[in-house]
Length: 482
Picture 1: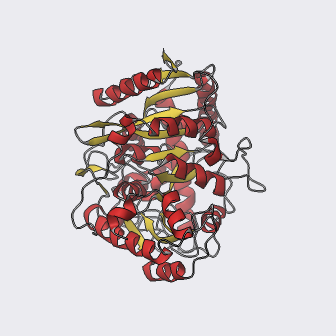
Picture 2: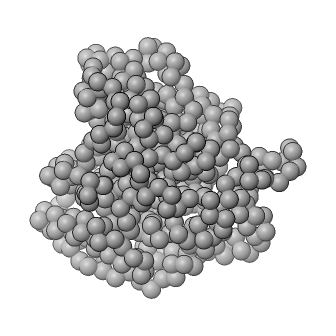
Picture 3: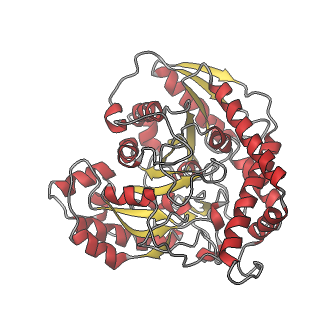
């Protein structure tokens, strides 16, 4: 199998060829590893590698129809526990952290048939909308323009999917970290409903319920099948999504009536680049041409800077907890050799925060969730840009900022349409539906809580259009396999 043949297939098509004996899991793994090495040279997408172990696993892979058996896969370097690979969470302080037991989701990925051969890059502690971590030796570059950001925090995963290294890669989203890089790299990224994908067994929630795990893909049906295989409530979990299932089968179900879709242009006064608004207008017209009702809306009154301060408090407290646990045995304080300036300041903020400060931040997050639920009431979807700008130039937003609050407020200018959906726990996806001067522009669909199925169904309809086919292109990178 040539690389061009390999990367032309989505995960389901590749798994079908493996199940039918047309190609072997080892052939697929060799293609993925060769592509990963080439893309890594150009874009810096890999952290820990286990190439030979993955090849050996491919040689003895058991094939089960309906799964992704034998499919090469990347885990995000986000700390999701795996006995196969250490993690750094993008930080020198946590470099080489190992796990004695798999996370529930890691086990479910393995049971779904995925063969993990490496971890993908993230910014330090996954706390930036761009992947420019010092621990990684430099930035993770956008494959469509090497001087632009890949997004974050699932930046390495998005680049790998966009460039054809793997059709599916693990990601996670605590403030847009699946949807940001999906938008920047022109792939499909769904943040599922809170509680849909398991977080345990080592924790019940991430970032006060803001965080969710998932995948980035090049086809909607791949995401739907992954959800079928890995979702479902974990015993003892603090959150549960409404029962769902048969997401892949449901893609073929037509909508019984025209959908009522709200179009959201103004994220509380944060400036939105005209290129993103052009993509929004084009997508709204496309949906109208498919017979749906398009309704412009203004968001409710909302203290967006106050919400960003609540995010700062939640993140800073989590930095402090993680760093204190890491350094407990030594009894020392972290230094600039351990943490980048913004995260080091976040640690200091977290250690001086009071319990009432944290409780109030959680109250703000919960109030934001109720605001978003009211905002979507009466609509099937909200359509917005995913980001407020095209992929930003590298160096625009880095952890060299010595003030964590200022850093996160700058990040919030880029992600004003995104983190509020983490607060509500609603499903939302970035769809590759627009281009500006060769750069991908993602459009976001938000659905009511629990309606991952309708996002997938509408995304599948849009995937059939020329707009999607024109926007979702392969990047051209040097030294790619033949």
